[in-house]
Length: 430
Image 1 (cartoon, rainbow, N blue to C red):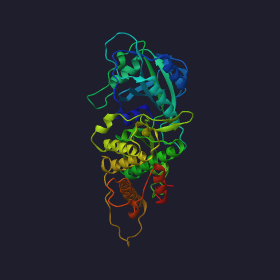
Image 2: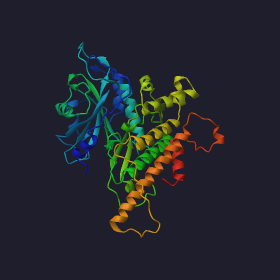
Image 3: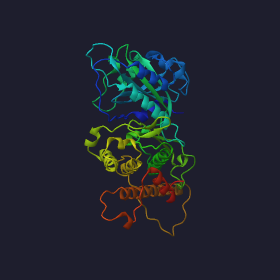
Image 4: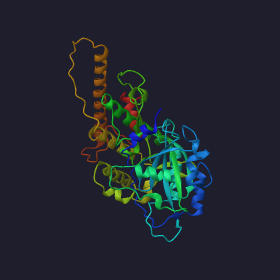
C-alpha cells in the first residue's frame, strides 16, 4: 500500500507550472454570487463550507481511501501561480489523494493594501472542474481521475499553513504565504487521485529504464488518440510536468516486450494531467479552449518551440483568433515529438544502452545469466524503437520540405490517433 511518506518522496521536486499571466490582488476577494452559484453547481456539495472543517467532513472523508478522519495527514507537494497543492490522507499508513486549493477572485472585501497570492475567476475554475471531469471519463483512462470539488470560506487552516512552511520546492521563489487571506476569502478545492511523480523528476529504474520510458511514451500517445476520437481533444501544453509516472510491481520475470501498452509487463503507469490550456468538446456546451498567453511564444528552448509551432500550424489555416477553438489534432503530434526527444536526450536517469556483440554459435544462457541477457536485449530494443519513432515524427513534421511529399517516402501523422495506428502496424503496441 502506498504511504504518505512514499507519496512525499515521489513529489519532493514537483513544481507545478502555470503559464498564464499572473493577476496580483491587493486585497482578499469575494466572488460575485452568480459565479459562485455556477461553481457550486459543479461541485460535490452545493453549499459553501467552512475552510477549517472541510477535511474532516463526511463529504470529503468519503473521497479518502482510508475514510473519514478527525485528524488527516496533510503535506504540501507543489505550487502554481494560482494554487497550492497538497496531499491529504486518513493516516500515514493510508493512500493519499491530491487536493488543489485555488483562491477565488472577485470584488474586494475591504480596503486592505496587503498583497495576497494570485487568485482565479470563479468562471475559470468552473471550466477547470468541468474539463477535468470530462477527461477523467475518457474510455480506457490515462488521464487524471477527478474525485470531487468544494467551495470553502475562511482563513487558511493551521495544519495547511504548517504543511506550507515545511515545503521546499528547491527554488528561491515561493508563493506568498496564504495566511494573509482573511475570514471572507473563498476558495475552490479540487480533489484528484494520486497519479505518481511528474516525468520531470521521475527516476527510471536502471534495469528496465528504457522499457519504462517506451511504455510511458506509448501510453501517452494512446491516451491522446482515444481522447481525440472521444471528445476532439488537444492538450496544447503537454510538457514533462503534465505527465505523472508511477511504478507498479511487474507481473512476471523479465520477458521480451510484445506490447509497450502492457503496464503489467513494463511495470510503469502514465497519467496525463492539467487541462488549463486544452481544447475539447463538452456535451451540451460545445468546444471549450483557452487562448495561449502571448508570453509562451517568447520563451527559449524545446518546450517553447512547440508553442510557436502550434501557432504556425493553426494560424496558417486561419489567422483569426477563433481558429484556436477549432480542432487541430496535429498539436498532439507536436507534443509527442517533444516527448520522445525529451526521453532520448534529456532524461538524466536514462543512458544509451551498451550494445553487446553476440556470437551465433554461443550456447544458450540459463538462469540469472539468461535473465540478464533478456534485460539487456529489452533495453536495446526499446531504445532503438524510440529512435525510430523520433525519426518518423521529425520527418512527418518537417517544415523545410525540399520536395513534394508525394515524391518522398514520408509517413504522415495528422493526429495522435493516426500515429497510434502506425505504432500498431509496426508491432510495438497492441
